Image (cartoon, rainbow, N blue to C red; front, side):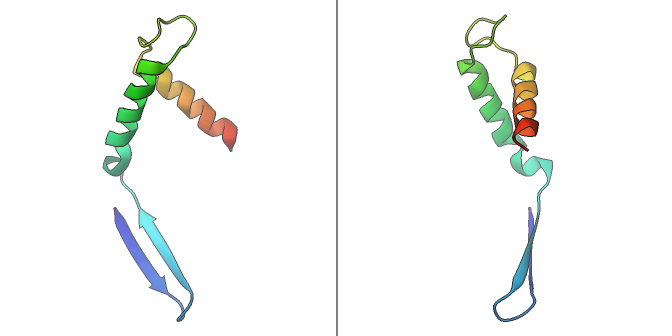
Amino acid sequence: MNITLDKQSATDGIIKIALTESDYQPKVEEKVKDYARKANIKGFRQGKVPSGVIKRCLVNLFWLKK
């Protein structure tokens, strides 16, 4: 993670944050596994949903909210 602060005046500034995939990927995988254990999706036994299906559902939800 790279954070920079560009001060334009005494009260104004711009904060820039650059993230790499390695910064957030472990937490995402952990949450996906957690959802897979709790998910109740038609066609799968409860708690036996593959991680790929969960990821697809989360991506679809993300795009629907935009």
